Length: 187
Image (cartoon, one colour):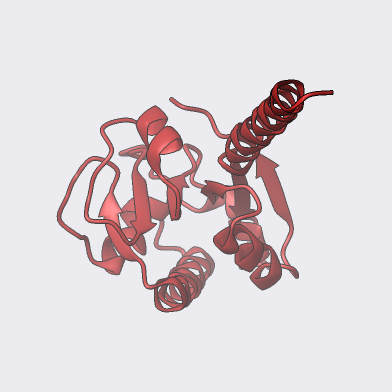
């Protein structure tokens, strides 16, 4: 073999390795960006109450006790997430930060037979930007937690990148609770 053939062989081998590396990088990026959801039913918090009947307008003492317990639990839990990850709280498509009390509220967490429930989405993240739609959040967010309320008012959903730090943290923190894996739907 002469130097020219050696150079061509080396160029082919290097080209092949670059192609493999490029495929691996793109595959890894797609794999690491997959969004996953975890659903937490309020029955995990109010173990002695049928949480199907949590109506925010109900002033029954047992209902009020359960709702106060859920509100207190979420206030502590979300405060811990914010402190642990340095997150700020935003609405999906609204730039100014919102107070944690806006998420930890009867209006967000519980159904009302008279008023129904307003489906809302909040994002906990570092960036000071907004997302116009759920698909935009899904494709552009990298280190955030999306929180959605349940249309029946029976629980809450957390969405994040699969196997991210926040995903692992939630799994460890909520180890004693029954969680439902829920697919991320861009609606």
